[in-house]
Image (cartoon, rainbow, N blue to C red; front, side, top):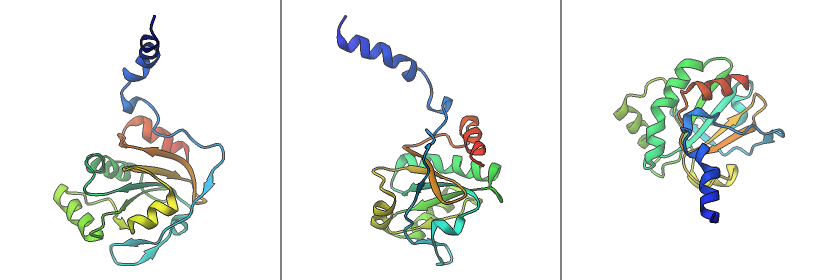
Length: 169
């Protein structure tokens, strides 16, 4: 039996499982304090991740030019509508070079109305949060520490995602 056959055989259970059928995060046993770049809201107010302390945060780093990012935004809005409140918030962080206006234009184009919009300078976000691709999503605990990270798109309104996020409350 060749090595390729063995590898394919070992990978089959994972290839046959849809992405939504697994929890999105491998939770950290050692939550990590995060550096926060300055984040602007739509009113132009500068915020930091610590401003959201006290709630579990799903920080989604995205850009309008990123097709997987665009695809998952409606799912993030459904998640915010389902769980958003005193204990949890989705924090979509747009890093388009064109600024927050481009993010707003995209929200309007696809009819997002319940999801907040934040923007930060791409390089500052990259340096502070050390990610390598988009979308990147961080699960942040009530003390503003990273407890999970996922690179790539996910079905954020799936039962598996909701269950894991609620477990972080």
